[in-house]
Length: 85
Image (tube, rainbow, N blue to C red; front, top):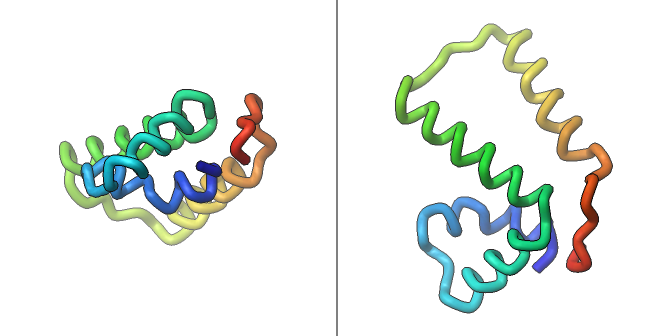
């Protein structure tokens, strides 16, 4: 599985909606890809935060700054390359 595939299936993995073969491939990828493991952990943290605190209103400039930061992190070179990329 490639990082792009993992990104597309992240929510399904978290919600237990992958078939057994896809789940095994996703878990194998996560075991060897620090980047995707970090994205999964950060996503779980964000979901938990939203569940704990509900909706948070952001000013337009804060929302734009946050989105710019996320896009920048996704575009940044990764520390530990995975063979499946």
